[in-house]
Length: 606
Image (cartoon, rainbow, N blue to C red; front, side, top):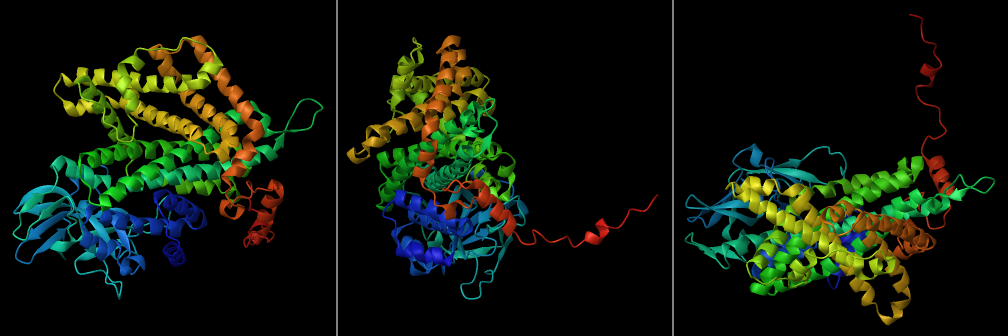
């Protein structure tokens, strides 16, 4: 890990996209070390986003932080609360006489837990706690708390910290818990970019309370953007293995003909190739989102807190709250499908697919459980539609909501042709826009209908399944397809030869998104049954057309064999040679078992 840290200091990424690419490369070399460093980086990002210039110099940019003498973590989740951040119970009470905050855990249920880097390694934490001034609670705020002494590495007075124990996987990751017993920290450790507590104990807002809470939680967007980028990388790893294997593995064939590569079978094409197009789309959108998020971070560092910045922050928060769930759900399915497409060999540890599944699995829960997190995007979308219906303009600094300006026109349209050329030349994008508008219309009407009871909690709760969650997923798929098309149209002249294959991948991804939601299109009358059949046939045809280029696409992803760590996915195609070599190189592979005498001892008659 320290070698990785030294490398990161020597090679300084120039922007957020370079940082993301570097992180993904390092993840393939050392998943554990990279994760530890990225969590430490999250500590620094929070200080940069939520702290003052002095605080940034003291913690985020200090030599101690860069050299890992100060090793950070981010402590939000508690035993009894996770996603519901407003109800966290750790307390931070200001003591005017000493000019200190007293950090306290009221009971074991309020213990911070599932904190990466915390169990054995971290010296400092960004701690989320309820701020109390003169017995009045001012809500969740953020504090820098020292956990361990910098020379002896022993816990600071009043800090009870430890390892969280065995998990399903990721046991190399240092997850921990911490309990605070009236731990005192200086007033200067309060991250006070958007609010402050004066020496005489007065609470001062620098923005509105609503904006303050949104801006402080916006610091979490970086983690979600990073998780989505990691998911796209994990999907590319799994598909590199399963696609290469499918072109080499031969089974069955026409009578009296040689065995065929299993990629020649329609079922194998349908199971893998749409996911290959999806992984490329996820990767491209991840770069777009990382770049936009990096721009927001830069504005935050410069101290910009105007209306435009607040809108940009809200849009990034909404998109990351939708893309993190969608990308991790897709990657979960890609890994499992890749494992199954490699048959029994895919179950071997030498394929790496089982390890990828284990490494990816926590992504569905941390930094926001997917089914809960995506509701934030659903709320953002339905609020936009309600504002538009009330005469307010659609506000979208990054353009992700611009199509909703034509909400009524899109909603009232339907498909009037059966032409595959028209489907592929803009027809699929129009269909995906219609699906989101239809689902938002249905969701808005249901919210209005249920809200007449006056029970707003139940109204929201009973409008998720089939409605708002589907609208949020549909919106993210639309954004990925739209980004695909933008990338193709903006190709530099030297890359223009790539346009045909990129268009194939884009078309297949668009068809995959549409065909996965055919029930909605038929329910709303956008497509008729004959059009639905035509789209299914077109999807299969596009899969077949991609077969000659499948390995070339994988080779263009260009994951080095040493980083792939898979006997089944090496670039030379020598699957059986690498696989059997791995089997034969295992320790004790030819030895008789230590209990061999028991095997040779007859069982006594009863």
